[in-house]
Length: 281
Ligand SMILES: [Zn+2]
Image (cartoon, rainbow, N blue to C red; front, side):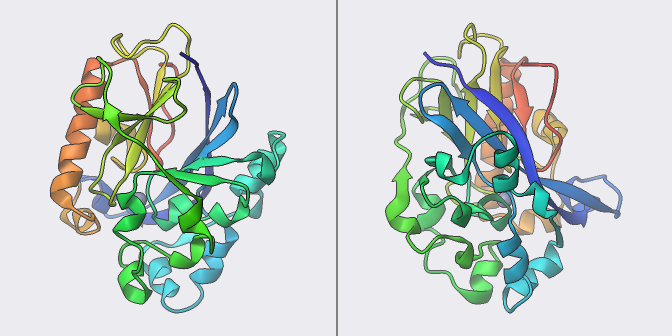
């Protein structure tokens, strides 16, 4: 079994009312980072988990119907913050990225896919299958901006293959062994968007799926707005739930992830729109 290094990054931020994302929070505008992660695998090299925003998102938001996205979710992005710029500072070029694991197709997660022309896209098939074909306002309503996807997106997809989960992954019955060496497992957490996946990465050689979670890092994507909400099962405001693809699925996915974390209390959690936990892994 291999281990990987996980480096949480962010490319831009969006704004929303705190009360919409967490029940009991004030009606105050709050900034949410558009998080993504660099996973460094000993053989496969640098792999991205999502990409955050890019300047293309901002261009699309200046014209119809993308302007609607910006009205609901205003975006701020510093050019020095794009995935490409940050990777360059870490010593990687865009063409070094051969694989991008896509949690789901919301604009803040796939904003920079076009910046990585050598990459294949690893995702759960329904993530694209349920949205492809949506255009205009219907797409924007799903936080899906089809122009963000490269023209050859479909042929570059490599669907994740799910098989019976090893012991220690319950309540998840199936996982996708992303690199075939149990360094990173993908689990299905659909509902927020179709086909959303979270990752559980082994970041320490002694870490085991059946242990207390020490040496494991969970990249939970948008399974919750904050780490605390995920760990404690805090409910989302009705307005926040309206944005879900499938609210019942979302609740089930969040519960499953929470149950797994309860059994693995030392696992470090990173959700896309909150500061990453530190000091656990
Ligand atoms: Zn999302």
